[in-house]
Length: 103
Image 1 (tube, rainbow, N blue to C red):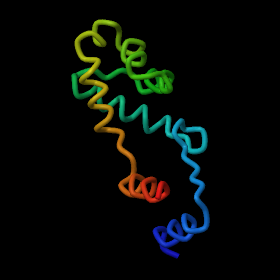
Image 2 (spheres, helix red, strand yellow):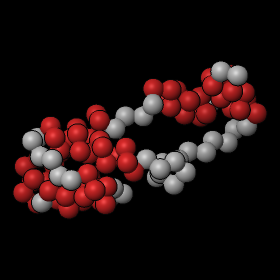
Image 3 (cartoon, rainbow, N blue to C red):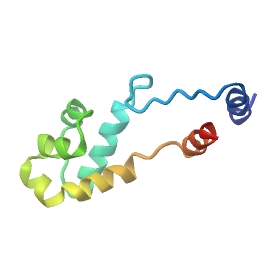
Image 4 (cartoon, helix red, strand yellow):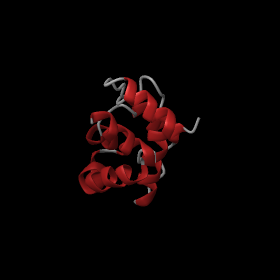
């Protein structure tokens, strides 16, 4: 059965949606770390991936200074968080699936 058909059938059977917003059901920490690494690379910094991974779970306002220092936070914090948002985007169908679940 095609995924969209399966999703449609599941949504039709129930009004309950299980949403994993904090990574407890699907481990997305590695993907977050990669997105942060790409964001840091945009401003010419390459902190070790293990260091970024260790701080995943913090808000971006805490992660940036923990990984790169207060000076980088002061100079580039907002740009880094914007770059992270661009690098870490949900799967194309996830927004439409979520919106259909609200109907």
